[in-house]
Image: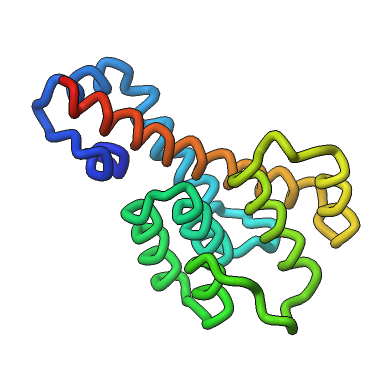
Length: 163
């Protein structure tokens, strides 16, 4: 049983659980992707703590508090600071936060809340704030994964209700 099963309410042995297991590459691939984007071997100076805080924040913005709590736990294990806890809670950054962090947060919020409004200028803003191409890619992967995961959980929960 993986995180998606737990958070979507899929019980082992249920029809939906068995259907998911007919494509083990999707189930295993999702777990591998979670590890890769949240706790990579090389984080490109985007630490596990920042990644967990951003993931919790995005899950909250998507209306998935239970998913956010799993990332809160990850943040606590990685070493939550008041700043990162505030980010995870969905709050505004304090005035003393640097432009690097402000730009990352703005981008994660933008792509999560209003993805159609994301433009080339937003990527250029990341570059202007000092993010390297590998950092921009790592951030994009994190944003994509959390948004994907939240939507899969909601979809599977809905399927479970009608099954």
